[in-house]
Length: 389
Image (cartoon, rainbow, N blue to C red; front, side):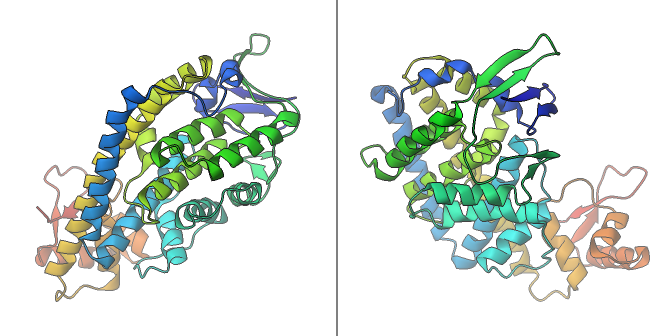
């Protein structure tokens, strides 16, 4: 039997296998009692579903009115956010520049300041792009195994060897607590049952046409994490399946909203609803209501992405004749894309691989042109920000 020992800070000790996310703490043994695809209260859900569908249509209409270059920028921003946040839910922090660069290269986008990306980053990106850009293709064992192999290219999750591109075998438990006082939080279906459960899931996913596509995304997410077919990576693959089905609901490979980002923002509630649903019977209304509400908030939050894209476009339209060198352009784009932390001359030099004197000259030049300004707070070191309103 494979046993995962999990602590509330997300750190684990394991026998045979891997680090698991804190979400595993809230998956309960009673999950096996749900008979999928489950039952739900249509009267309670239809108004919310209708509003979500309205927001989807409105967002797609807004984005299509922007023109192709701005659409590309919005898609790149959204996919970058989706990959980062899906991994962050699992406690894994990826490098934003590497993720953005990996996506841009694979989509053939002309973007300045691309950096090399690690195999780990490329694997997550490959899975997400296959799910969203090839959303019309059937979901199969082979495809899922390919995603799993992309997530774990070296066959390890952290320091632990795992089974890659195959469903788990034997028994699997997730426990917490000190030795001798363990508490079992979740017991996945035994290995001999997983194949049959996945056959049933995939047949439903590929052939069920009567269920609304957004509702289907919610059911598929819950169903897949309940089966928990892999040694590790189940959460990320469940979210990729969700994004695939949401792309089908939009009828478009262009992603303008991030469900993973919103799930991360509501992670505690996500775990609570998941636990309650899996402790119950076959009525999954609670889960569907939360999922639709979360998606609703994700769609509303996408307005911030639109604002950021429009701000970036407006900035470069205003400065298309301004003399700006490659180092300055790189740093301006980082600031427009949401620079993390405070910008100092030393950070400028490190990122652009230039001397401190060159960095300071670049900054002072942009201040003179009205593009940068010193932050008002001041402090031990001088910080800079874009001069935009």
